[in-house]
Length: 285
Ligand SMILES: Nc1ncnc2c1ncn2[C@@H]1O[C@H](COP(=O)(O)OP(=O)(O)OP(=O)(O)O)[C@@H](O)[C@H]1O
Image: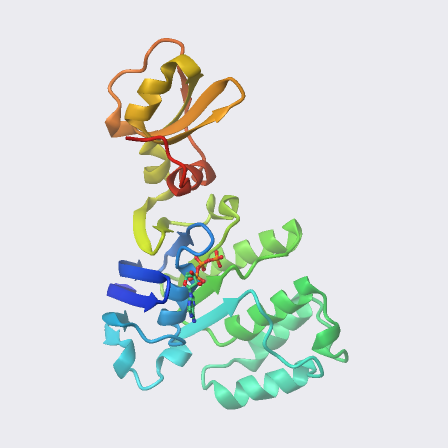
């Protein structure tokens, strides 16, 4: 069952066109949404969270059009971005009261559990919290509403590895019952290694690659060779770069039937796949 579906969703700004985005988020899955700066990740997320209206296309939540959902989506979607939207002078009990009044699905006991698990001080103004404490508080607020879809837009930015690992574990636990899903946009691609079931890569407003982590890694080969192989690199690579006195490039596995002598090859990382796809200065024909 598909919990979120984007059907030909487009949005135009002065200098940017989000071009017919299509994807589905099944129940019980985590999707990593990746792309370089300015490629359209936040725009997509703001369309899903009803902060922007699409110029065309339809967004469905649980099979219902977002535009017809009479704000049901508020309970279905939990959204965390890289900002903290509570006033500095608030204390945790004020936030708890607001959540209780505003969200019928809010579970105060679950909220208290997160607050004590993460040792967040209840007698301190939230403005005095460290970055990591603020992120934990945001997660406590959203998770204790038990939304079906959790949407994270670079939400783990600035967190130390301990907190980040903790949050990733929470996400894994969150989808375990097969009823919840996560859409996760991040620049730290190594975060997705162990948790993302699918990866969608967006480049310049277009969804360019999608598949499981393994499918993407299997579909490409990273090759290195000397400058004398430049013609081969030009012909075969998605793009390549010159590093000192050798070349490194990314090829599609199905675009290569033999490797000339003296070329070496290995499995790329997700980061290298993104890097070579987003290189503007491509030497490809
Ligand atoms: N409200 C807006 N008005 C005008 N242009 C906008 C608006 N929102 C986004 N854009 C433009 O849309 C493009 C995509 O921005 P977006 O924030 O979606 O990228 P992103 O992939 O999330 O980038 P980053 O990784 O840097 O956060 C950018 O060129 C941005 O300037």
